Length: 403
Image (cartoon, rainbow, N blue to C red; front, top):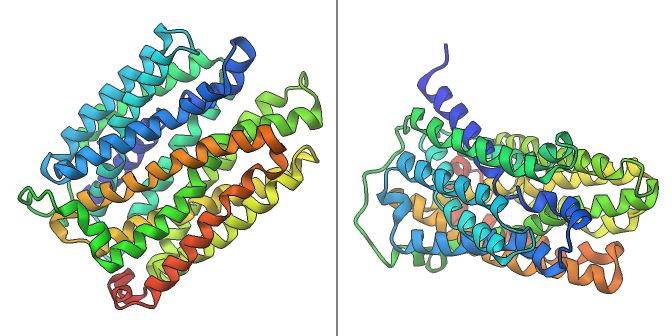
C-alpha cells in the first residue's frame, strides 16, 4: 500500500504532466498550422514566447506579494490550472493567426506561475535527504508534460484541434486531482509579507550564483524545446521528402527527444543527492552545450544519427534544471522557499524570450545548420557560475554537504 508521501508525490507528478501540456499545446502544432493557414514567423514565435512573457509577469507578481508562500498551494494550483485550461480551449474560438490567440497564450503563461513553482514547493515539502530526487521527479514530469503535445499531435494525425482539446482536458483533470495531495512535513508556517524577500536571490551570494547558473541553463533550454520540433520536421522533409510521413515521424521523434528529459531529471536527481548538485549541473551543461554546437551539422542527413544526438541533447538539456531549483530551496530561508523558486523561474523565463526569438531569425539568415550555435554561450556561463558556487562556503549547504 502506498504511503501518504509516495501517493502525494505520484499525484503531484501526474498533475505536473497534465498541466504542463498547456505550455507547448499551441507551439507543438505550428508545423500543421503553417500547412493550413498563413502563419507569419513572428506569430509562430509568439505561440511560445507569449507563454514565457505571461509566466514572467505572473511570477513577478507572485514573488512581489509572496503568493507562493502565503496562499495554500493546492488552492493556488487548482485555480491556476482551471483558468489556464480555459484560456487554452478558447483558442479554438479565434483564427489561429489572430493576436487574440497570442493574448490567450499570455494568460496561460500567467497561470503557470501558480503551477510550476508551486508544484516544486509541494514536492520539496516531502524531501528527507533527497531534495534533488524530489524536484528531479517533478521537473521530469514537467518535461514529459511539455513533450506530450507532440505525442497528441502525432496520434491526432497532426490535427491541431485534437492537440489543444487534449491539453485542456488533461489540465482540468489535474486541477481537481491536486486536491488529493497532502503537504509534507517540511512545510514552513505562513511567513509575514516581505516585499524585500524577492531580492534575496541577488543579495545572497550562494543564491546569486545558483540563479546565474540557472540563467545560463535557461538560455538554452526553452529555445531548444520550442524549435526542436520545427527543426526535425525541416530536416526529415529534406531527407525523406515532404509527402513521405516526415511530419508525423518528426512529431514522434520530438516527443521522444523532449520526453527523454524526464529520465535525465530523475537520474540527475539521484546522482546529485550522492555526489553533489554542482557536479551534475556542470556535467549536464557541458554535454548539452556540445549537442547544441553539433546538431546543425547533421541537418538534412541520415535520420538516426541526428535523432540519437537529439535524444542525448534532450536528456542533458534539462537534467540539471531540478538541481538549480534544489540548490535554491536548500540555500533559502525556510519560510520563503516558494518565493525564491518563483524569483528564479521568473528570471530564467524572462531570458528565454530572447533566445526563442533569436533562433528563427538566425534560421532565416543562415539556415538550420548554424541556428543552435547561439545557444552555446548559456551553458558556458552556467558552468562558470556553478564552479564558483562549488568553491564557495555555501556549497556545504547543498546535497547534505556534497556541494
